Amino acid sequence: NIKSKKVQGLIDKYEIMRMLTHKNIHKVYDIFIDYPKFGPSILFEYCPTNLEDSIKNKKLSKVQQVFNIYQIAEGMKYIHSCKIVHQNLNPSNILISENGTIKISGFEKCEHMKTIDDITKLELREMEDVYSFGEIVYFILTEGEYSKHNKEIVLKSFSMLSRQLIEACWSPEPECRPTFEIICDVLNKNN
Picture 1: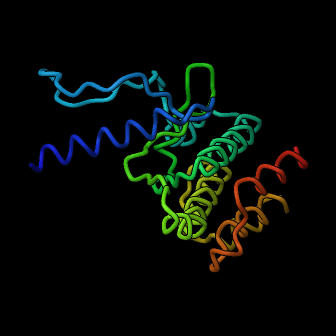
Picture 2: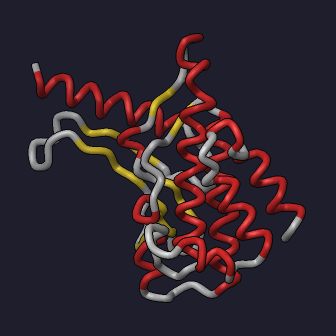
Picture 3: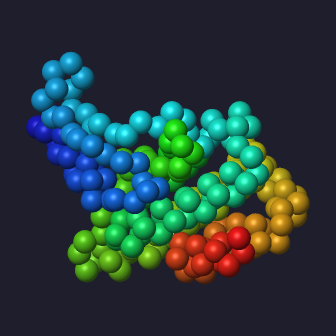
């Protein structure tokens, strides 16, 4: 019974991922339930690295870093437009394809908000993803630092746009955080 619940959970996440068709979302190809060698598993597109490793190993130019921030925002805008909250957005779940395209992955904790009751919770949950996006932007711009130490000092060294974006994403009042639609508009206007 526990095994069947886990398999059903895997199938549910697969169905969510399968409906997400965007260039910045990690593409899912198939699900294998009765695969004797490995057990239930999902087949994804190949991505050789992730954002965390690329930043820590200094493999991205400043231009690539900025473009990656934009691609993450575009992918998250699409995810939220599908009434899905990610809830696990972090640098290790941002994959990079062979051609350098960002692919958001790590949908294990995601939720598809379908019912009227879910929709009322949607905005608050989306703002948790926005907060995590602010953490990722900070991680990228500091080239691998997490925000727990000296974040006020580090933020002062950022451009005004970067600082304002991160501070808005980290607002203590979730309702004051920008949506990904607003973030993408700001990034487009300030390219």
